[in-house]
Length: 83
Image (cartoon, rainbow, N blue to C red):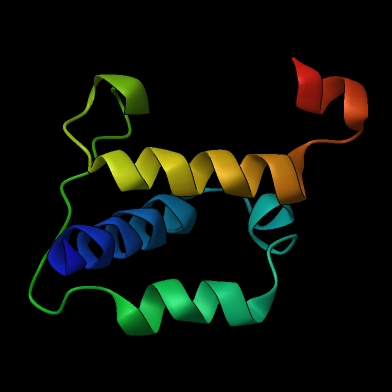
């Protein structure tokens, strides 16, 4: 269970490295550092930028974390959060 979360942190950290800074900078530094510092050491996620994320074999927790980031930091308003 713990490894799954640490793998998810690693996957989110890599995904964020592929994103535009305008999105990444909306996430508080403390949270970004959590992903970077608490990721599973030795685990190198294989994220293919040519394939949609939902078609990749990522940890379930990775999708949950990305959904949380979307709701809390990337959605512009309450309407967008509902959709």
